[in-house]
Image (tube, rainbow, N blue to C red; front, side):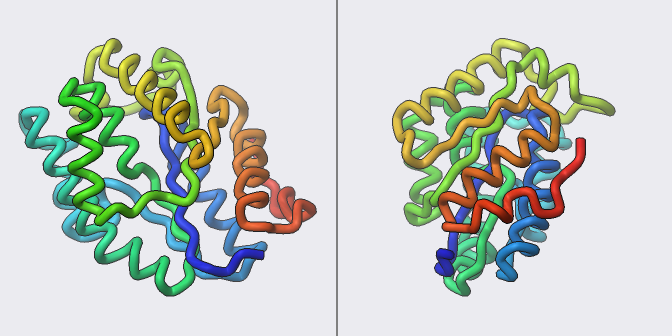
Length: 218
């Protein structure tokens, strides 16, 4: 089993089930590896991040460039204070969203340009990329149907915005297929979790017989 620090990002559109799958994956990894597993999120993985999250998602109007800079600020602090120290300790780090979200949402969704937003995030993180990115792929219409409660500022965007973000994610996969796995998020929760575990088990050299331990239920 690989014991060096390992960095996993869970990506996908709003409503794809990232938080649910990340929580189950983190619990399983702690059980089968006995290692430190840090489960975090963007924005909001730090005290500063929670403040920025509230501002960008629940505050008043924020223009697209300011939005991109707020996410980059959160990411720079998140990497410096949480992600990189944990990886240096040899932990497995799982984050709900990372730089692919900025490229999809601000680069494509807000039409700021993917290259510019990627350069901003790469500068903010000093070039840190996940070892593996799990993309939970779900058609925007199906994702929107899952949303309940009051929608945040991002979730209120028009349908074309979310079409562009999905296209962006899939284009990212095509550009660097070795770093991504795509999982159909339209399946049931347990099936999605088992598929994710299979990919992670291969990447971390975990015994395949352990994939179904404490199997998630739908």
